[in-house]
Amino acid sequence: MLFDSVLGLVNDVAIDLGTANTLIYVKGRGVVLNEPSVIAIEKGTGQVVAVGSKAKEMLGRTPDGINAVRPMKDGVIADFDGTEDLLREFILQVQRRRLLVRPRMVICVIGVGLPVEKPSGNMVVDIGGGTTEIAVIALSGIVNHTSVRVGGDEMDEAIMNHLRRSYNLLIGEQTAEQIKIQIGSAYPLEEEMEVDVKGRDLVGGVPRTLKITSEEIREALQEPISAIVEALKLSLEETPPELAADLVDRGIVMTGGGALLRGLDVLLREETKLPINVVENPLTCVVLGTGRILDNLSHYEPVLMRSAKR
Ligand code: ADP
Ligand code: MG
Image 1 (cartoon, rainbow, N blue to C red):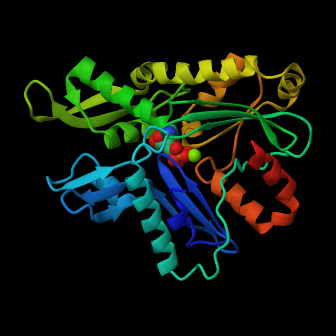
Image 2 (cartoon, protein in one colour):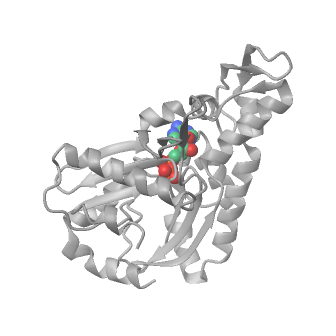
């Protein structure tokens, strides 16, 4: 298997290798690494120059000889070598801090504290960087799973496209992400906001500053957000009736960084007429949940075995 060489190093460690962020949990220590899934590589030699936040700072502004990339950007492992390098560097960082003595295993599951051992159905919507994963879980197994290639990255792209088309202003992915986090929304806000955006004028070629409002960013985000809503509705239609009835009571749990977009919960509530709950820590809950399993392996064994069969 591709990652054997890397994963063989570790033990009692849970890794959430996300398209945007990677988190590592060590049993008994908690989360020991939380970094963007970005790697910077020297072009000629293939040597790793930087990983994580240092590499993320280089995205879109690397000198000629260096390539900063997100190897899993589109939700699948698009760049195997880059992904393997990234994972190895992160594990080495953790090991250098001498936190790992006798490694045992690596797993990744949805860890949002749902009572999945009970027969009732739960729906989890995980909006990450590259993908949105929708899963219906019951009796410790996944009943239905959908993955669409729309997530936070598409929202960033929509913001970039809007500024280019409407104002001839070129901005980078990072600036777009900041705008999304600062004023982005999926539903009208009680108090709309505005922010100054710096970019490069497409016509004059010079740097320029522009004021933009939360209303127009919401408009720009409509396409990726509708895609998420549609995927969710489709998944609800495919849910077996008995479980669908459970969802009416229990609602849908939202996680992943995209769940933090303002008003997305309100919009989904309106669109589905179901209760929507956002988990407490959308960016860390997967690795925390996996860690909880590591801490209580015997208790979770039946769940793990059933999931492994699928
Ligand atoms: P992955 O599991 O794919 O690595 P994450 O769950 O870490 O993804 O989520 C990363 C995504 O969440 C990014 O697109 C990021 O821009 C987005 N994000 C993080 N914080 C916020 C926020 N406050 N509002 C909207 N989007 C956010
Ligand atoms: Mg994730």
